Amino acid sequence: MSASNNNSSTQPLTISIVGAGIGGLTAAVALRHNGHSVQIFEAVEIKTEIGAAVTVQNNSLKVHDHIGVVRKNLRGLPWEGAVMMGSDGSEPVTYKWQVPGMEANGLLVHRSDLYEELKRLATEIEGQGPPAKLRLGTKVVACDPETATLTLENGEVIQADVLIGADGIHSVVRDHVLQQVVHSQDSGLSCFRLIFETTKMRDIPELGWLYDGVVGTRSVVSTEGPLRMLYIYPCRDGTLMNVVAFYSDTSDAKAGWSGHATVDEFKTVFHDFHPKFFYLLDLPLHSPIHKWKLRVLPLLPTWIRGRTALLGDAAHATLPHLGQGAGMAVEDGGALGCLFPAGTRAEDVPDRLKAYEELRKERGEFIRAESVDQMEKGFDLYKNKELQMKLLAYEPIEAAQQFYQERFAGVN
Image (cartoon, rainbow, N blue to C red; front, side, top):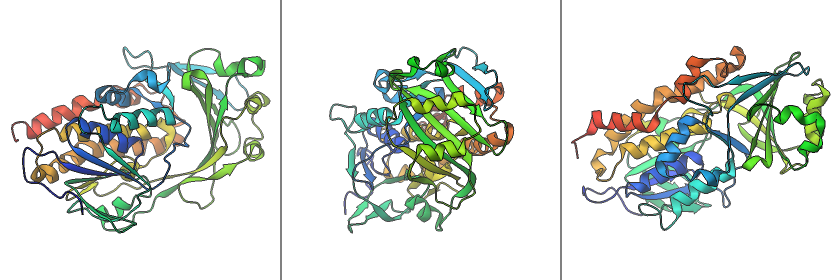
């Protein structure tokens, strides 16, 4: 058994984070900067981000800036707006962001570039605070939320002052926090994830719709038949083109990656789309095509128990229609850093986690609900100034720091 709950106000906290995804690593960086001793437990031996690309929107970019993310390392492109088209090849409509003073909504990046930068900040020796220890291939099979104790598959028991469950939609930690298993719900959608190399893109005149006009996303929505949509944007300095191809799917499958798909499967689902959209398939594939069954979590009664809290998809897994799934995990991680500054005592932990839930739960649940509702609303993010303001003008670090000052200033 490792370090247990300390009682000294001068000792850093020991913090266990289950899950080394974007949210878990963000929390690790924020907490190590405060001098805490962080261990990250990840079940897989080699952690990869097969989700291809991710939108680092303005709200999450504010957290990244706060924790020291070097933007050039993300190799991102500015998200200046969106182009929407019908699957029949009709004339495209361009939308620019309506938030005052916002020319671009963050960056369009490859997930692995973001992951590697966060891992660097969490674990590099020269960073601020003690480097986090990343333990790959260490599967957590049980935990005691009241005492922040983990049990690993190999029988090892780890006790800490704080336990963060950042272990995704199939979270083990969540089962113990809620004292019951909560299953995700079928959204009725699946998607293909494809990523192409763009070296030959401008040699294909029929692909002009991909790069003419505003730098940002391209959406192609079905005009007939069941809901289908292509959601396309560049990443990695423009050398790669990310494609998410959503489609209605009533099959019963768990959330997550369900293996590789073929070009023929893609063509079958989107068979009636205008021919110009199929010229995408003439570009070289950068990686295999993946299929992903989309599921969401129901609203949870709580995110906390004792010395344990849930973060990211473990707490509020949602659909990607607002591009805010990773963003909410990043906001959660940044908030934890603000609520656990240097000097936080072990006895303070339960109250700090109650504050974390109070600060974060309403916003996380709003994003979850709004993402699901986007299908019925016709994907109106680009037209809806009120929604844009709520998502993108939010100041996650400022809000968390102000919340801390109002609740805890002068306590330590």
